[in-house]
Length: 269
View 1 (cartoon, rainbow, N blue to C red):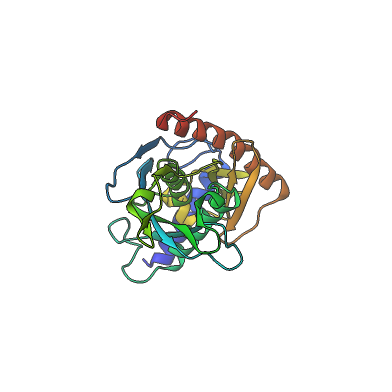
View 2 (view 1 turned 90 degrees about the vertical axis):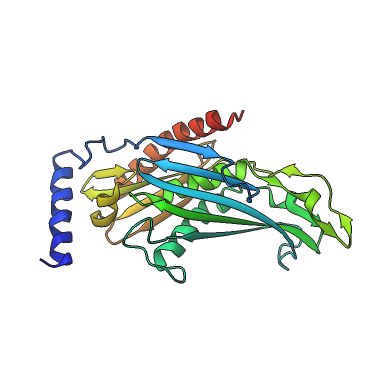
């Protein structure tokens, strides 16, 4: 039996189950799997975090470097995001240059962090127009069991929140830059992703099988004030206005709960 036929059988199974008000793993449609957050696990990074959502397992690492600002933002630091999908995490991933899914993952997560103005980039200016801090945020997928967007977004935020800018380790013209200081994080966006399994049936935190055979996907990033900072629609198919409104409503609720867990884990007030 071909892979296409097997995929279609799985798709019909997930869709028919959703029409009955059920999910494959028995969760409610708005229910997330257990979330675990750990930080400070990578010694060579300026900040790091590990996030597990169910069996999905991702690491985020932050490295800092001194560089030259962009001409259109001479007094702001920069942020570059990348993601690596390795075969160890899933048989669907291959070694080599970044794949389309890896690029999409990095861009969607980057947008949620960037549009929320999570980091005060102005505070990462060392010498206006000449030297700034460059932030490199990298994601490594250890185990893919669905919903990489939310896992990486949360790991990225946790890593940034626990980053120390290593000013004391760098010099400009043989002069020390200054003392180390915490990454200037000022916003706390949380991304939540929902997938349409059947008309009106919107599953949050899609599992692996839902990721593979589900319909259109919508990821929404909201901040601590409940403001929408970014949205990204993926995969084929459409969403009605009511479905989009429902996703946004639940995203705000779930985002607030996940943010509270993050703050509690990190001892943030």
